[in-house]
Image 1 (cartoon, rainbow, N blue to C red):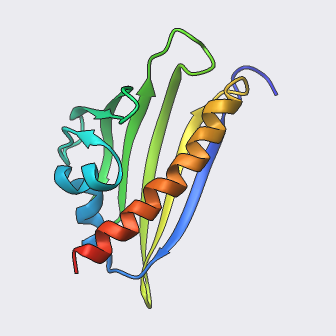
Image 2 (cartoon, rainbow, N blue to C red):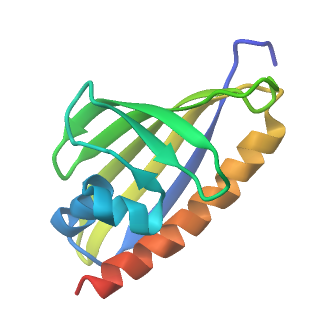
Length: 141
């Protein structure tokens, strides 16, 4: 693999809730905080915001795409002096209605070959985030 090649983390979930409900959880700051991180998100293209992790890290993000109840993407950048953790990535959520709810696909692209730890961490992290997302959706019944 050369230096310019990047890898993607993809996590897909069947969610037993309609796209409208899932969309709220992906775009309302108080709900995002419950399953992802503290944030100052606004659903506007070009809006810059931060995600603040419980570990003390801060992600620099900018909204790239918004198609209500269909697609949401934003940059997910983490500045770090160690190149292995200095991440420039883009996260895209794609919602597809199904008979029983919504198919949610999350793709995070931009991991360099030397970022195995960050890549593995993202893989595990998204699974945990989505478990919390399920709980948030269940509570919002």
